[in-house]
Image (tube, rainbow, N blue to C red; front, side):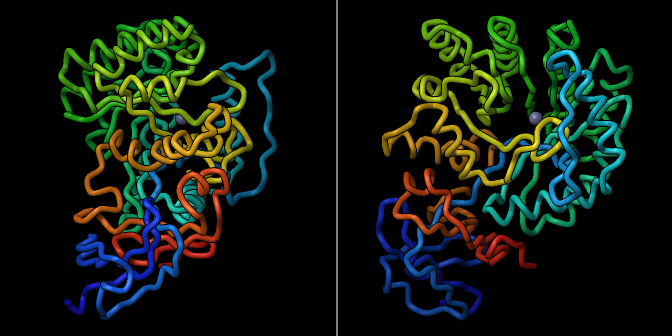
Length: 399
Ligand SMILES: [Zn+2]
């Protein structure tokens, strides 16, 4: 055995067996029955804890969280929920908050210490903030590149057509280092599905990047938008490269209508992100999975202007989704776990995720009997390893 290798001993895997894992150059080189791993320069005893793959935080907003800053009380919209008013309230709150880079680091430390080592964050790009938020978050991403993989989405929080100059800014955002092009409620916000999607898919095609669109629209309005996104995805051969975040409308459809559109979504290779927020219908996770749709998850907002919730724990998120979906059996609970690990890795097109030989040694220890119990108990503390290196324990990042 090479001196650069690390041996993780007595790790319980999902099948209940105890194993030793040989990690070499940051990857899992071998998985052997416990006690048969031999010796290595560095030995780390997992002591029978469950070893799970790192969590995939598939949808969050690093630029807007107030986590770790002073508590900013939530202000409701004055005449019922309105995205425009929420954005105005957010601007007000952010002006009074700690600097963005500080808040982004707080949120990253929270997510990493909970076991998320892969993340997709939307970052606001529009006429009011221009590219300044992206510049800040790009710098923070660079600081954290050794301990968490972050994809950034150029997110038009104020619409594309409604906020002059946003289309060009989004294109520039990709040139600067954003990985994906985002979108926002093409019909209800910009009132022009064609115009909105022309910009989003135009940039994606020209720049060769993936797409992740926020879609809050309910019922048939949401379903119609999804059909159009699926059509464009297929026409451009972008199957596997497009995600719709929230897709609340799917939760409003009759089972027959939902099955029909689920087949289309699966065929188009469009993935669906849900965080199962409390006051909305949300996509029928089991129905979509049965149809072959990749469903993944994220915290979305963590203690920001939109809501006061969020703990950056994707295992707890799995529990929330399972709870709201009526998932009781071990198979259902394992599906919820899949949402925050393997399905997330598939939606984000991550290479080398999972506890298999050849994969990156990105994993988290859990005091649980098995995955279903981990989903209902979301146990802490956890130890978190990035490419075989300890990066967090006892709720804090170690560097
Ligand atoms: Zn979001």
